[in-house]
Image (cartoon, rainbow, N blue to C red; front, side, top):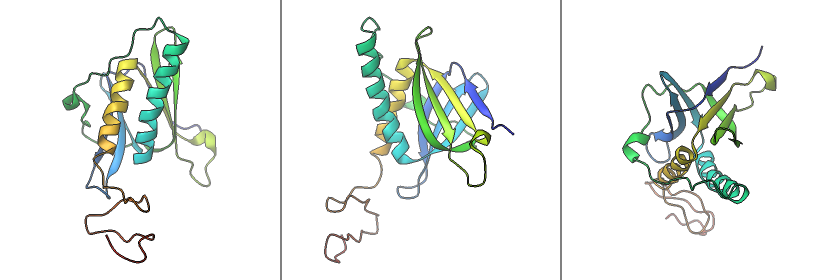
Length: 175
């Protein structure tokens, strides 16, 4: 049996967000087209990697197609909030970007995380087609959210919890 394919082409809104306190947050990727809302669970690192990937992809597009106007980086943070209900369709394992040159749209492809005992063709997937400006806003907003997390220990690179942090590189001392 084939997995479900969610395709929003084009989206009216694409965003990311989280629910929960730092250290206990769950991140989401959400897209909407007309009355269809698709929400996916993503990892914080995926949000960050996607943001950097979008910028790199847009730079490469500009080099390949120098006549394309620059994608605006202006967006309204109030419009980037998650819509309710937050009812995720699946947990994302892989993200990829593509470009539809005819329509000047980027496509974000999300594949469900591999589940043991299930064939890969049974995995769910999603394709969200968005303008270059919408994708840039997704990336900029995503980086803003990622930076709101716990501070990072300068010694070991691990997040510091509000209660403190046992750093393996501090010779047993707690920060």
